[in-house]
Image (cartoon, rainbow, N blue to C red; front, side, top):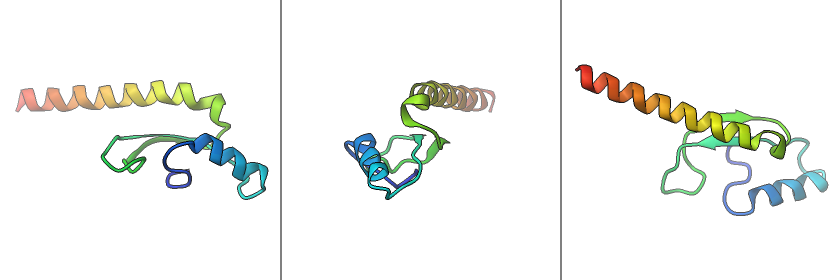
Length: 79
């Protein structure tokens, strides 16, 4: 998962590795975006079939980031 298939075509490469027997499972990760491709801090990780959870995890990740930002702004405003 984190660090396993960084960069372009990650899902395709993970599926190929699974078909070759190189891995036994895959998953989905939502991470902070930084300059380094796929190098940001993982926010949510699910070890599950990719297409089964990717859209749900993206929404959960967006909600998490928005909640963190709202909390940060509230703390700054009250200081």
